[in-house]
Image (tube, rainbow, N blue to C red; front, top):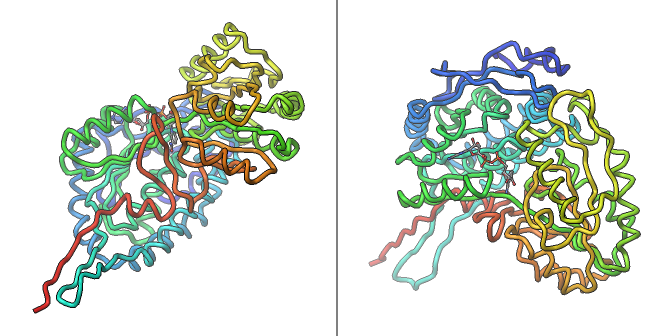
Length: 491
Ligand code: NAD
């Protein structure tokens, strides 16, 4: 793959595999891997591309390359790093069409969503390229006899483990902040969807980033284990499931290095008395159907006051009943889920929800004849709060509605899950909405709106089983830095 443009014709329809094999990107060059893996197009279940799958030795080579690059990169002026990041943002925008199609074919999401992800990715590179220049240190007043200064220092080599659902955005947000802060990075995308992260490495080369500051090595659990346990990786950012996140955190803790965990969610919409249902219904629908429910911040539960229950379900149901399923490039409402395993997982939730007494209020037409990994969205009503569907992350297009009689009950229901990523409160009475929002134990709360993922500038991360640490916003620059205190005794 010399330029991304050469991929364009093969990206146009789901029956074409990509013509090239995607090698590892280590030390500023492509490196032929010792083994290859098939990257599957979830819309067809056929091979989309052949991609390198890093071995522990290749992980080691990537970390060594980052280590060589780290001192000079970390010592460079923030304005220099910012200029390169903003140049990278320009190149992402230049190639946005190819990148959006790559992301769509790799993840299965509708093309409009693939395009939105690439727009957001460019924004991350721009944002961190800009704010790093104003990322000021501090001086601490201790009297005329001394000068105390606190500077931001990069960690050195940072490791980034990326999931398959939003690789374009998650790579950009995490790597953008880490590079801006002066770290040299090693990125391990998931084997299911590694293509856009590999494309970023090529664009970074074109932008003029020094060799070794952005290494991209797709692979599976073996590569992830090698990266997160590596003695020269000074900080690990992990986005993925709770179980893997805990393994990663333990690996980091055992060698005394910090980790950041962005894990799952079971985000709730609290629809209080006085909510504007016409405003809420389309947003609630979208917050679930986005990428077939495979969004960490998917709004998967609706907790509605009894007085609005019928009106709300009636307003949401038509969106579900008319949702179209199809291949991402045809831009349906909902694309496929990522794999056959994921189809089975969602179907298991569905069957158990029915057995537990949930009622189907609306359902999209089945995706018969499409091939690939499709699950029709289902709106479940009368979901009991002590059931699995109400408390556990499905990662598929199932929405659970339950009814409450007070704001306090709504908050208690929202807390009836081990996750604490995001939530939304719908109510036109701002005092009441704010009171409720502040009582929720989650990382981000929206009032009268919902933006899954939350926006480039807003600090993002969870509480409880949703993880710790914060990506996005200026806060991520703090995450990818450590402070150095200098004290000068003035004679
Ligand atoms: P996963 O934990 O299976 O995989 C995530 C990444 O970890 C992949 O790159 C995978 O190859 C790697 N990995 C697997 N085993 C590893 C190991 N032992 N050591 C190190 N790395 C390893 O998660 P998934 O199924 O790909 O992603 C879905 C989950 O991610 C959901 O729970 C979702 O909510 C969560 N997620 C969270 C956010 C967020 O920002 N909070 C964003 C997207 C997804």
